[in-house]
Image 1 (spheres, rainbow, N blue to C red):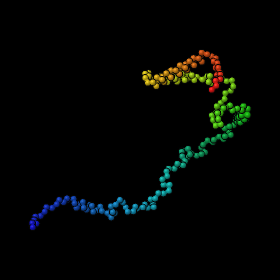
Image 2: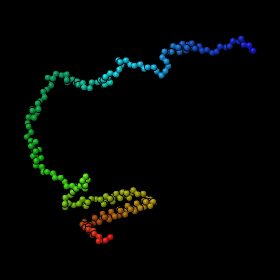
Image 3: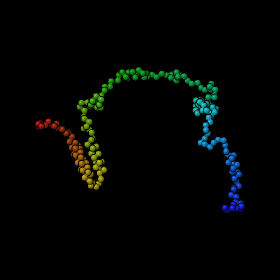
Image 4: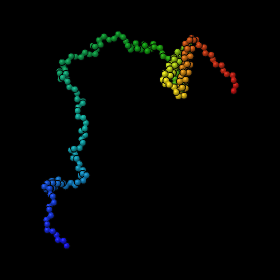
Amino acid sequence: MPKASDEEKPLSYRSKFASVTREEFNSMKSNIPRTMGYMQTPLRPPQSYLKKHSREDKTDHNKPVTCLCRNRNPKEYSKIPKASSALADPPKKNYILENIQNSTNRPCTAPTPKKIDSRKGHAFELEESGWVPKYTNKEGLVKNLKQLLKRYLKLPVHVDTPFKIKQKEDIERRMDALQRDIDLIRENRDILIARERPSTAFY
């Protein structure tokens, strides 16, 4: 059996602040356990409860505006003239009687004649007999020609696809037809349109 050596072991390192740290740690201890919080949340006293009308704006909006003129003596103000004295000369024109006469002598307004396509459909005003039809004065041909010209100018310069070629030819054909109709109407003052004869063919 080896004998135990009588040599003393060296002391382990001990910080000089160990006693101070221990005292500080013991002084920070409390009776409250270290949990997420109190076991029972303490209630507020009744004096700190929310009172009625405590959050309203306390500025007095209904307080009348005080100015220097209100502090003066009311006897200093000049007397306001009465309404009767302001209108001493009554008007010579009787507006009430004139309005009555104008309303009685005014001719009655007859409703404009209208045409309705169905019981709950659109209403169209009817023109009186003998008037020039509106479609003769319309500029629909020139307007359509301008629209087609605008579309024609928007086409690309290089037309390579069959769809673009067909579109360009269609616009040119329609523009030529409109130009012929415009020239025909402008050159001839009176144009007679013959009625179409009913076909006698049997099927």
